[in-house]
Amino acid sequence: MSTTTAAPKLKTSAMIASFADPGQKTAPAPFGHALAKAAEQDERIVGLTADLGKYTDMHIFAQAHPDRYFQMGMSEQLLFGAAAGMAEAGLTPFASTYSVFAARRAYDFICLDIAEPNLNVNVVGGLPGLTTGYGPSHQATEDMAIFRGMPNLTIVDPCDSIDIEQAVPQLAASEGPTYLRLLRGKVPTVLDEYDYTFELGKAKVLRGGADVVFVSSGLMTMRALQAAELLAAHKVDVAVVHAPTIKPLDVDTIVAELDTPRLAVTLENHSVVGGLFESVASALVRRGVSRRVVPVGLPDAFLDAGALPTLHDRYGLSKEKIVETVLAELG
Image (cartoon, rainbow, N blue to C red; front, top):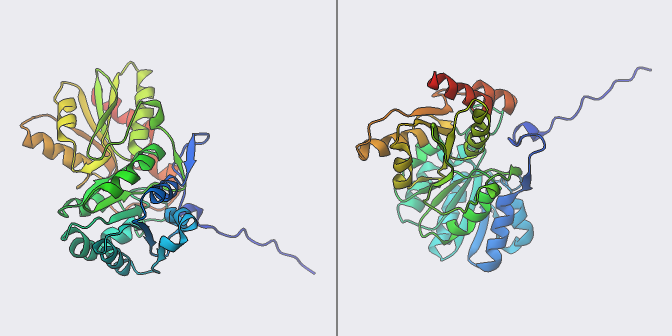
């Protein structure tokens, strides 16, 4: 009698892989815990999802407030239409799905049901940019480009667990619609070492530097800080400006930091088309500041599938690749 060894059961770990470095300090499901905590203080807060409660950390809220949690099934248009109705009735909805489904599949519903009447609906998008190895169907590399053109919509790209925990109550309190690029699962805790506080609409200078200035958002602020430490070994002094709010952009802070002789670099987990780089470039032109800015971001292409460390290195998002880029620019 022959026996066979069963193949290991495939899991969804590739879909929800963490971008945290081995041994890095992390916090579990910061969005879910922050939303549950905010709901204890504000009875108007409700949570909705489109069959992705576990994979957007909304399940934490569901466990804490089951009577205020709504599972809408695999129908993103219904998700945001229902959220709009709840907001019209005076509630404060947080509606979660993957960024690709919100930006590509439900754009018209978010635009006309939520943004046009300026309702307080908070769109929560998981797997933003290159945070999954599943390829173009789930990689939201152009979500900010899609949403930046929508009037009334505030866009937030948090760096870490601190950003998310502090952003959630501020998003709930803001009057109009918001889009949060969600980092979920075990999320790195980075900004606690920089005397940082999240303020909606504000960029913050995390560290000063005489040679280079990084303007970054999202997980790329973590990488910017790491790269700055590595560049110090090359005697390159790097400033890091974290811009968690993409729209409205804190033009005053960013232009003041970039209007210097230092090498200027933007870093984003998004296509170089339509995201932070082009927002910053536009702000400089509008203010009459003529200078070159080097973009570190994803290419204008459909990206490969694979392991996240491999993909981040391939597309220039790893700290090592950032260091290479800066040293090449400095000559």
